[in-house]
Amino acid sequence: FYTDLESYKTYWFVPEIMYRPVKIEESYSDGSKVITSIEYKNYGNIYFPKYILSERYRRKSYGELELSSKKELIIQDDWELNIDLPDSLFEIQFPSCLLQIF
Image (tube, rainbow, N blue to C red; front, side, top):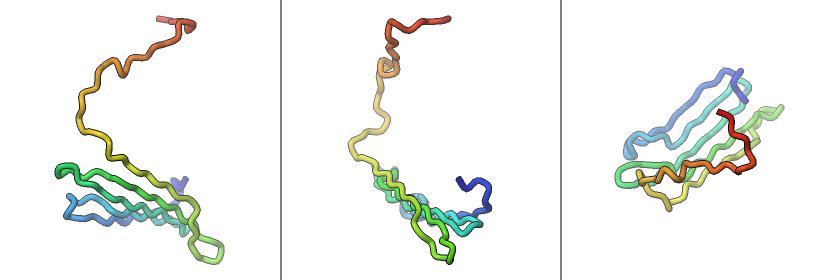
């Protein structure tokens, strides 16, 4: 989307949560910007994102920024780290009507 524009990024890191970024601001040469905010949850001294908000702003013709898009990612708490997964979860059952070519 913005690959042809010059840009710079500013990061806000928090030492108390192992220097994880809590805010990233990307400013582009056309005056637009993307601001991403991240909230974390501590899972046994490992910090994982629990909420990410990314807002894209574009510059109106008279200079004011307006929100043009917004993305939210909410991470659920009902998961476990490093659980064993059986190989059968990754087996694909193809319908018998498909032709197999080897």
